[in-house]
Image 1: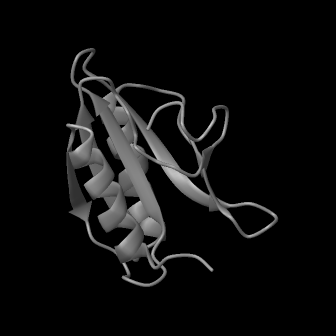
Image 2 (image 1 turned 90 degrees about the vertical axis):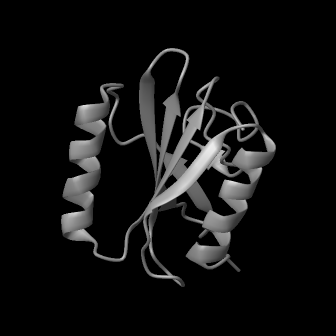
Length: 116
């Protein structure tokens, strides 16, 4: 059983804060089933990445990088397009000196613990 979106987002923000990062909800979506986008900004390199929530064939939550660009303007444009498609979308922004995303579930292309 998956956590509701609001609980999952709260846990992510708590993990980021415990790790010394700043995290905030920049867009609040549907509390129970809204999809989440995480924007991780590396304050040391001034680069950002985004991760979008998806679900694997087994129904487990996993994360993908839908845009392979680290230009913040391009990432913000992607997020705005997604909001147009999905009014229930959550957006969480994390600022960290190491650019960590603090996602504990599987992230495509890396192990779940490699960045969080």
